[in-house]
Image (cartoon, rainbow, N blue to C red):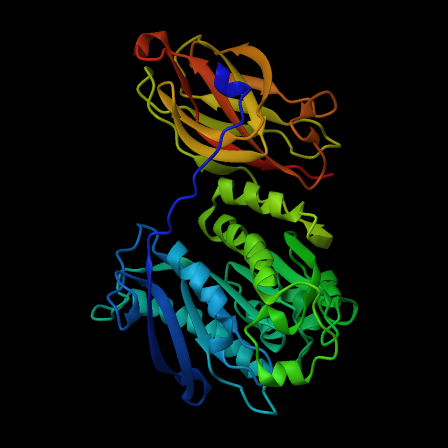
Length: 426
């Protein structure tokens, strides 16, 4: 089993979607027919304005609604839609509340409204988005828009996740609204932010969140305005500078945000492991908070001689204090021999008669035997096992998979289950 001890390199997959765009003005009849000028960036068959919407997966394209900073325009966030749309997200950015006396509450309502409106478009025959819009969504924003994203999440609990960049306190208060926010949250701040310092803005909002899944990351050297393209008004109000380039700040931001969205809106275990790796980056000055989303699938298994594909689940708790996590592999050949293994990286490679989902340095667990019903278990003792990169600690995420003999299938005479990502808590 050479693959158990060898490091595996994974080629990044080319993002499949081109970027389409249109500017639309929607009307919210529930607010005295308020008009909301909106930029829509969406997965398309070719790049360009009014390009045909790409064929969506069965779950549809998730919607991401994003709010701009004070006196800033939607165009300043090109780096976000250029990263998210090719990955299969519809990104909507309202152009409202761009004046010197913005109504933060109205902007929050606009952000929430646009998610519902795009989902309505997805269910309306004749709309270019008919059949393409998914049920999952996230709301985000920068600075003022970041605070407004918290307001939006408190207004509409059907929104699945909330994220923001250098969020600012708002009126009505984002800090007060955070007590009503139950959705998973990611807040990204910068150590060199003298416009909305963490201790006076994001830190207070994060501490007030009601969510049991919230993370606050402070990027070392990042400034307030570099969370967007260069902007005259933002630059005028900023009296300190970043110690990293704007491009590097965008890259570090996306390294956190893209896999976090994939885990939250697509239940993707590989993305959750990638997010965990990004959290451990030395580029982060601090990480606060934790999240245990439950086991998430990393990749699918191939059928074995039982007639089914091997599954991998868990029983017990991922709490280190409880130390009661049990790994459970099912739908295996009767009474076969196998073992579980785990790693902090992912891949997707044909190995034997199946698919290897875990990459990097892989740690084996003891050999086990399946029952006549094709179920194999292992009680994971987190106090005794040494993980590939050190001990299993609270706040870390690991991928688990099972290898098993399958002589009746022929071929390589072995197969693998699906893989599952597990996050450990204190």
